[in-house]
Image (cartoon, rainbow, N blue to C red; front, side, top):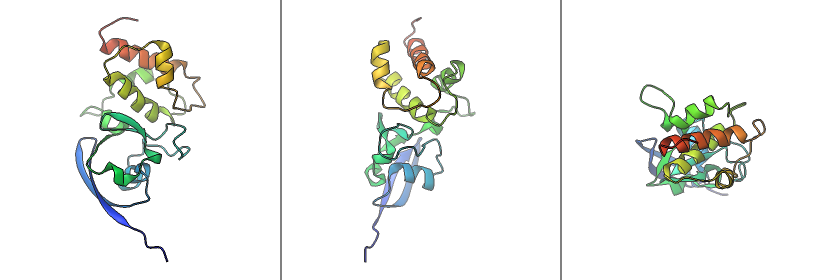
Length: 164
């Protein structure tokens, strides 16, 4: 008979120190959703292909569905919930998604936004072609991607103090 193993995972999630026992086979998606009710982390393909589960771990975007929860030990994790201001106000990139109608059903939006956060925090200016490539790890059935690209580009230029 197989015995399930559990390990204690201590990490920082959206600025808060957290600790929980996790099944060593559990994905980071499962830990974030089930233990911390962070439902912006979507369960899409569960094989690292669609990007709906993207979170930022120590400044880099990862598909949390193929990242084991135990690997998160000692890490700093950010989800969409961590982007909002203290009064619940939207971050600049979230507002840009609204302004540019880059959201339809909304399922893929949190993952797209987390990838956009990684792009924007690089402080670099990217071409449309580079942005398309950086955003290509996401599947969206509704928007046709153009408005998503516009939202990221608009926010990038604003943060760089430039006009399009």
